[in-house]
Length: 171
Image 1: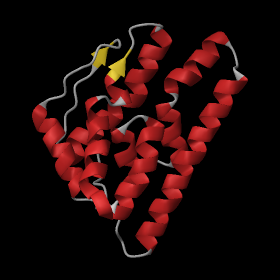
Image 2: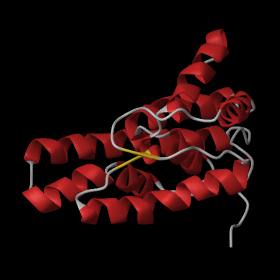
Image 3: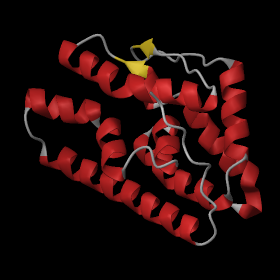
Image 4: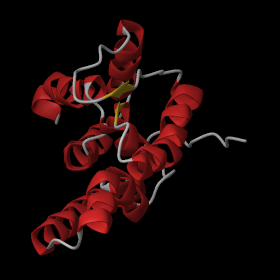
């Protein structure tokens, strides 16, 4: 991270522009409802905790995020230690979500919870269409990557409190 901190910040900030939690479906209805139930609270958390409001869209067409939201994301990332940025550099690409990565880094989500949120689509599709062994192995590998990132965050915190500030309690 240290040799080119700005490149790491820029790479992570790019995930806010296309965060997994911002792309929804209308159908199947089961998946649409689960996305609302499981993902909306984390977008609400980001807005309440950090003042960052990301736009949500339906379908695969890109949604343009508000410039002020992206600027705040960049400022937040710049405020983090190199250790936290390194952990996010593993967790965020694995999850496809900067929002989930930040919640993970702040201790608001466990590795298992973050992985479950990030794989909601795949898990629901397997529930509807049947078990897929290759998909299940891919999801397990993703879970291991996220767990490794959390282990690294714990080490960073134990080595000098370089983690992000503690999260506020939400009602």
